[in-house]
Image 1 (cartoon, rainbow, N blue to C red):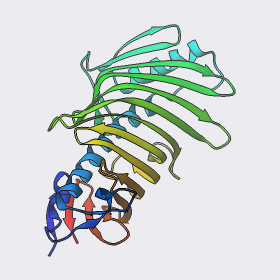
Image 2 (tube, one colour; image 1 turned 180 degrees about the vertical axis):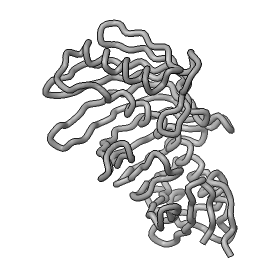
Image 3 (tube, rainbow, N blue to C red; image 1 turned 90 degrees about the vertical axis):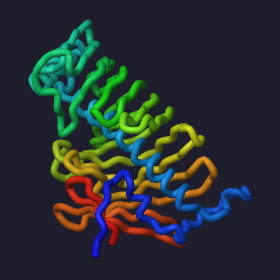
Length: 281
């Protein structure tokens, strides 16, 4: 019989007798087994940071809708029109090639690809010729789950049809106040059905929380905007104590994604449905 729980308590379904042995490094502490509490902490950290990353990615995505090759001022003007049509709740000012967008300042829709925005987002189109460069600044931007303050530098590679996002900032999960400050360097490409379906992410992220520094390698993570967790790929998370966990994702069917938590010696697999409900296998 499958036992249901929420994504936030996924790690709590691990039994107390089940320990994950950390991948050894050059310290005695890192060679000790990872306890249930440490596994739970690792999952909570990765989940909260992923929620913040999803918000950042979605706001970057809404800022890509302009014609390639136009002057930067004209591109920014196109972007203003697009945001106004998609999110009439936004108050937008345009100075030269810089937009300042305050979500929720006006009545009307504030939801974009399943996320309800609030806060301020500054977008500057730096270059729109043989290369596209856009800079972002987030000021307490939120989707109701997390809030983010920080910056990002985004560049497009036309040959590989990808974009690189280099960012830094601070995030806070609203439900419990869990927070982190960190940086990321990731490359995004569209999924086979286009960016309207989602994106694939590769790269690395790191952040410092109350327990210390966490490092996350991101390998082939496929994010659909409608899903609560990635449908494919792997996260490799190194804890402040130097122990490692692997989170991998694989789609089971149209409504279900299998999430496996573990390392080279032990693993635990759970099914997550479209509503974010977790069932232990």
